Length: 75
Image (cartoon, rainbow, N blue to C red; front, side, top):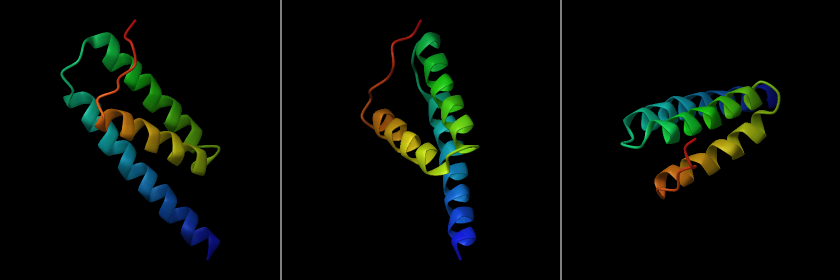
């Protein structure tokens, strides 16, 4: 049973990561901002390999920031 819920969480995070990547690609922002957002997505992806629940929380925060128009500073 627990394995099933872990698999469901993995599938949900994977789908949301895919959505997040699409949203970042579609943004009309400077390239530095896009790169900063891409790095954040890479961090979430890496976290998913070790702590899926933490990755889900990070992704929730990132998606909320995207939805509210809060973007990191570009380099």
